[in-house]
Image (cartoon, rainbow, N blue to C red):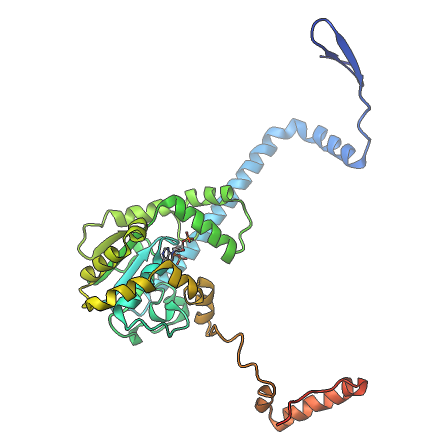
Length: 333
Ligand code: PPS
């Protein structure tokens, strides 16, 4: 291709040639600045690129340090967690999005009368490592206590109690985790971006591979029962019976069909707010779900007003609203 200042000659098929006249780019201030910087930096491009490379590594190292500090704080919290194991304690252990909540529900059904009279499953089956933050008194829980944990093997408090690990296909975990990040952490990246983080273990609870591997190695330890999410989907009753046997629970045969029914996806979906992590955070902060639509009765709130409050309100009402004819409606008694 031949080019002059603004004429470009393009060869066509055969011997033919065509000359195209290109108009020069507009002389904008931005372009001039760019051209100036380009000329200025060109001789020092190598040190500049090295500098940027070092800067990006320094930033990564800083990230790792911050992550390390965060992990160390968590570890110290765990070390000082007031936990005395009981032999009948049961830990549900998993990497997030692997069926933890499902096992919480199953074990709740198996260790109680199964009543759905609770605000959130975390009330009955607390998240072990979170109780270091929420200052939940684990000693007050009745036996057998059931905890959920996402701790990797090295951090798990290893005692003479029972541990049920549930693993799920890592691809499904990644997708479910991505959806969870979007719905609960307001993550706005694409799945590809999330997947890159997942593969590197740069997501909450670190590497799925590391987590699963750590527990898989202990699957023959008699304190551990290793379950698969997919097996549970295929044969829920079988999984429940396995859990009953492993935990040495005495469950009357006639209760089993109801436990299976209540542990089904459909049943849990109907009571989703009792399992949703978002509600767990609220419950942790002392906020009780199910109080959004309260009583719907006119005048009920006024009973909480003391005379000075009434007076303050009435004064302002008179000044701001009665003056413009806005009525304060009350229902006849
Ligand atoms: S979390 O956030 O770590 O507590 O999540 P976790 O409970 O481990 O996993 C959530 C996924 O488990 C699915 N789930 C169930 N599947 C089948 N049957 C029942 N009863 C059931 N209960 C929970 C839940 O739907 C999540 O998976 P996805 O694929 O996102 O639906």
